[in-house]
Amino acid sequence: MSARARQFIRVLIIVCAAFWPDSASAQNGRLPLNDAIAPFVVANVEFTLLHELIHVLIDEAGIPVLAREEDQADYLTAVIFLSQQTGLIYSPATGRRNPSIDWPPVPGPPAHSTIQRMQAIIDAWRIEWTIAIQDKMEIPYADPHALEIQRFYDMVCLTYGRDPGNLEDFRIENELPQDRAEFCEEDFAKAERGLEFIKTTLRNNALSPLRPSKQPAPDFAIQLKFEEAIAPTHRQYKLWLENTSIMFPLIEALNRAYYMPRPITVRFRICGQPNAYWEPKDAEVNMCYELLDRFVHLNRFRQKFAIDRRKTTLGMAKANSAFK
Ligand SMILES: [Zn+2]
Image 1 (cartoon, rainbow, N blue to C red):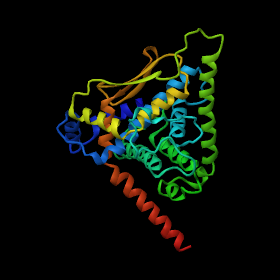
Image 2: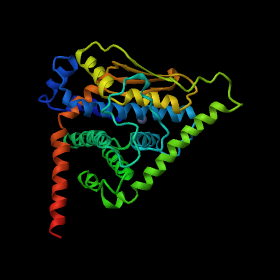
Image 3: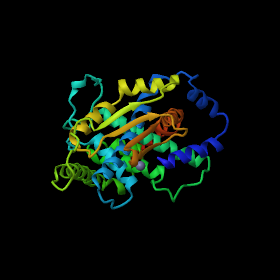
Image 4: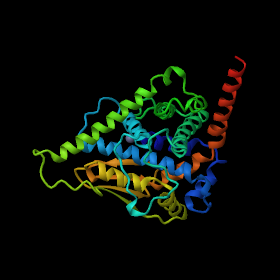
């Protein structure tokens, strides 16, 4: 997530003071968090965490990277949110599952909540890009990540590609051109096969007689830890993640289906910057609380830069087609 982190630092320098006191207050815990924004924040935390875990799977499986790994991490994250073919099975044995959480996907068209989750992620990329353009920030062409606007279109394409027959309005309101949309169903199917390949490779590695023995059992190889949730906002984030997120069932399902060669820890912690990163030498994914502060900040722009824009775009498209 280095591009986003760098962007955040640029925002710190450039953004006008009118925005900043609110964000600073949120970070200091003085501003109460409204539960209504939890779905937006939680969906984007889930996306970031899963993106990092895809890096983990690629590394731990020893998969050759055929193109930009950051794109692969985004694509396979979308597959896990949307696909019925990932082999991830969730058993509600822990009793943690909120009945309102629709995941893993059931056969048939994607659930409304699944599309809402993807829409929150897509909106966050739109908002990041819009802020960067408005503030005339330098465009990070050399970054290992695609530009925010490209990540936006990729996520729209994969979501649409999961069920193009039912998601035409979704495609229009998210401004995905027809020329790109034609390839989305196939792109989604290819990404599904990519994830299956990683799973098979991890299993074959674990069962290979050439590997050193003592492979850990597949269960519970990825562990989730929360540290230093001292500020009231951070404690609130933890509650949101525990009560409304698919994060726990997601990790439980990954542990059942993916044979990790060593234990992996996911640690929520204070880092000093809004970031998330995989540290192979420590076998640790770091999820920074400051990144959640960033999602709270982005949510302030969601109505204007994302929701209103989608509504206007869809309305205009429908009006135009009515006169044809
Ligand atoms: Zn990445």
